[in-house]
Length: 436
Ligand code: FUL
Image (cartoon, rainbow, N blue to C red; front, side):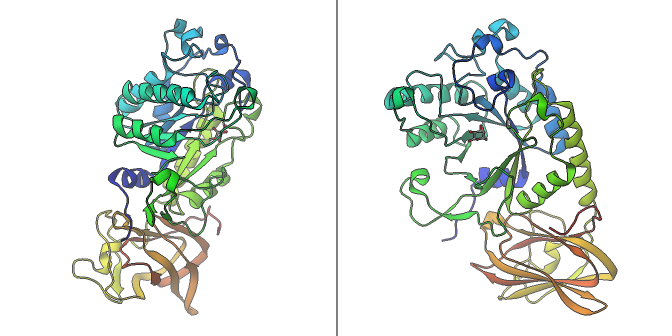
């Protein structure tokens, strides 16, 4: 049995980009982790406009957005019935505001997906550390967020579990949390400390060269499933050093080349990139970040503007009927080449000497992830040369290589766990991108 993604996991992976929005009490206290005793009066964004966040997300190609509804300090950005530590006791919109509502409405009306981060670790709530009582509190909050804001596509559970009052240790009721999510939003993906999306393991935005969406089951997250499961990786990273907005980091927004490197090492390594862009004290995405995001989008559009292998003549070592070599070069996400025998190869005739420095491969992951090893060869004036040897492909693999000029290019699928389905083989030339 080869695990396959659910329709929701597939849609999320194909969207490739998610926007993380760290916003809350810390924005106003200039901290990364609040202590929980902050005065709600401090929360007072002057021009909060969720439509601006959503507008930018849309313009830059993000399809999922995740807002920190509650961070570790326990301050709630929505009108919750279960604590006084919320927007209700802030001066913002005279205590009648609800950031989650404005956020969810803006996303929904733009056709984008709503997600929220709800920190289990809560440094304000006094029941924290009294496990059953706090778990009830947490489930009540989850229920509000899952039932009052329309469709939710992703619930992001951070694993941080700090000490409660008097050193008490809180045992999180993960199974109970998952049950409420499944009950109220059966289509929502549960990420990180959850069974649907896996944390990549660092906060740099970098996946591994070999990145399998098929993983050994982790009992806590998957019930008692043994054997393999579909558990794809998400790379979370902030556009700035911190997760929250700090004015003194306005000149530390990641450079364009750093953000491009992150893209190639996340989206280009079979992962989803969850890029954090924190709203500032106005409640707007900061100007330097907006400018950088636009530069980044423009650069990505330039880099991938023209696929040099698109609809070129291709020949495969073998192919199933209806799944010929041309199916990997037609730009369609629903068609793919399927070899009859392994190892297999597909050769593209570029017709004239063509220079490229990026190779793109995609598997048809609706059927699972199968390729374990591949190589790319190019016919240059010096004969056939291997320009890349790689391992996994998955949804999308992007290899940055030294520029090569060739008349023919070949992908060899050398090893696979099951019959590979190759959805795309693309070539690009982007002088601004260096070999990775
Ligand atoms: C971490 C948190 O402690 C950080 O503040 C941030 O929210 C990050 C995404 O997850 O575990």
